[in-house]
Amino acid sequence: MSTSKKSSPNGTGTSSPNPRGLIPGDLAVLGFGDNDSATQITPGRATITFDSAALGHIAGQLLLARLTGTPNTEPRRAVERSFVERGSV
Image (cartoon, rainbow, N blue to C red; front, top):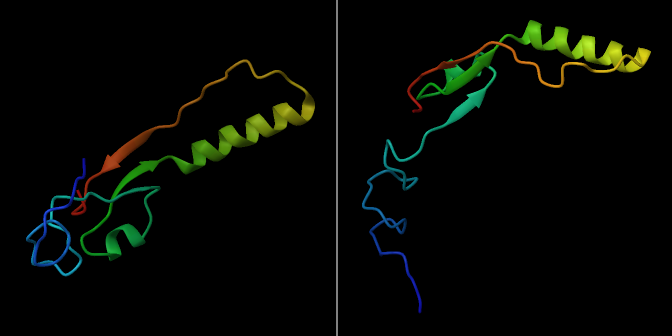
C-alpha cells in the first residue's frame, strides 16, 4: 500500500500561490517571552509573555536553598503569564 501527496502546481500538495507553499491560516507561529522582535516581523508573532522578574526571583530562591542545603518544600511554582495575540495566529 502506498500513499502519495496530491500533485499541485507548487509541489506542496496545495494550490497556494504563496511561493513558500503555505496558505495563510495553515500555520501559526508562537513565541515564548515577549521582546521587540515579536512586533518587528510581519505578521507580528504571537507570544506567551511572563513576569521575568518573578521568574528570576524564584530561581534565586531555589539556588540559595540548594546552596544552603534547605529542602525544597514547594516542588512547583508558577509565575503569571499571558497570551499576546498578533498576526501570526
